[in-house]
Amino acid sequence: AQTVTQSQPEMSVQEAETVTLSCTYDTSESDYYLFWYKQPPSRQMILVIRQEAYKQQNATENRFSVNFQKAAKSFSLKISDSQLGDAAMYFCAYRSVAGAGSYQLTFGKGTKLSVIP
Amino acid sequence: NAGVMQNPRHLVRRRGQEARLRCSPMKGHSHVYWYRQLPEEGLKFMVYLQKENIIDESGMPKERFSAEFPKEGPSILRIQQVVRGDSAAYFCASSQETGLSGNTIYFGEGSWLTVV
Image (cartoon, rainbow over all chains, first blue to last red; front, side, top):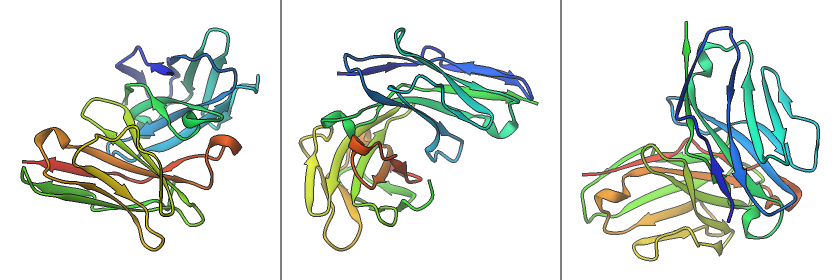
């Protein structure tokens, strides 16, 4: 079974600065998907960014980018030019490409990000 | 993320009552998933359904919990004889297909069940 670990329960960043959230995972599969979801105080789950393991290029979505290190099984999220609206819980998630795991997202426990004005 | 509709958003039940949570998937989506989020935890998979079929319920407690996705109407997650430990946020998600094609799973806004 796959596991996802987020070792930082809480992080804080000054507005307009850059912050990196860590995520590691354990799997024996060679192909899979990785995601970062954001859960603001409204508690809605919002997809931030997605990475396919077979792609070497790191995914980027505006101010959000990832550092995907497949050999190290690391998938960190970088938020540039942090804004107050970025304050939220951030969850890293894993999903297999095929089989039962292809429809089961495995989540980490989350990192609570605070943005300081 | 828009389009997965869940109701009610908040539900309070006394111990022993039944809770019914409803989910309408995004337009064009025929695959529905339910996840549970306990306080201070990430989401945990409960069940995966397609129309009129339960595909995988391996994450669902064996007793008191059931789910359905009828041919017509929303998916229903039903919790009978609720206990305090059932207090959690229940998220529904939907997708066009399973992960084989890499289709993204979109979440609803969640239903918060409080058992008093």
